[in-house]
Amino acid sequence: YSSPGALQGIQYTRSLDPLSSPSAPRWQDGFSLYRGLMFNPNMCVVLDVRIWVAKSRSVEQVGWAILPVFETGTQYVASGYHHLPLLEGLVQLELLKSLMQQGKDILGVMQESRRLRRALY
Image (cartoon, rainbow, N blue to C red; front, side):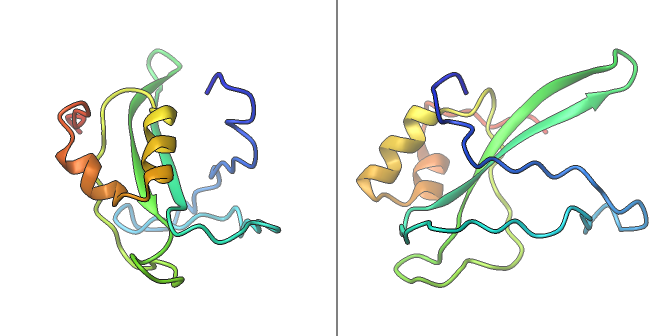
């Protein structure tokens, strides 16, 4: 995330409802509204997954995943439950930008890519 503007508009989810199920967690942070965004069929949500290690009081990188916002070929939001490949290492912003500009099926490319390794979680 070292490039300028890479964190612009980022939203963090922090307030977990302690009474929610681990298999279907609920968050109490409320909704985020993004005004002025133009429709882009390749728009995605990037999930940077980290864990809190209480013993060492530190945060460790687990991996990352990406979720397309829209159903392929439509302007409809891809709502529902999603199983995403969790990839090792840090988010690769240059790869994501390249895929978005080429208009490729991002999930398909990520699943086929030999450059990206799945995390062991």
